[in-house]
Length: 189
Image (cartoon, rainbow, N blue to C red; front, side, top):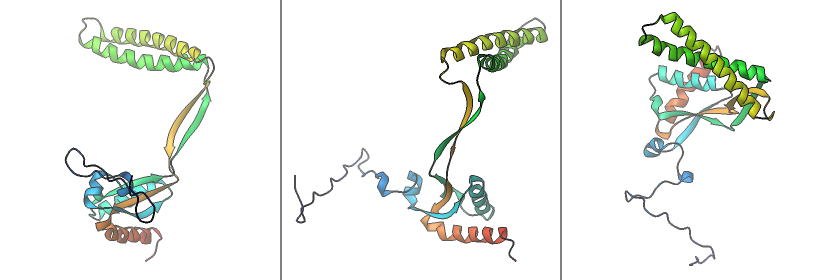
């Protein structure tokens, strides 16, 4: 192992990739490989809500800005799970019956196309059979958890802020357009 005159070990160079070029390391680039081909990206706006960041990019698009050179980046992501209610065996069976009925309807439509029987009778039969089997499987699946998850919930990813990034070459134009948007939103004349 060699050391430099100041006593540190030099960084190991990155070996060439299959195409002969040296791959970009994550710390060396910002954004996707398309952005890496055109240069680094720059933050041109920061918003507290996704809808505002989306509105900003829409404003850029409305003003003929090349929006394919932008991206919306959520920062400080967190998983939020909203608890919707208590899950009982009856509720699990009901949810299973509903999804089973939808599946039965789909099967009934397929059978109805190729059956000589009455369409309504085929649909009704497959919906009922699907609902019954769905309820049975829903109840069994809930009972199999052994009470470890007796609630229903909906999960979503949320960001603390949303940044609009643009390629460095067009960042000044994007900033100018976003300043116009903020000026218009403020009600200034």
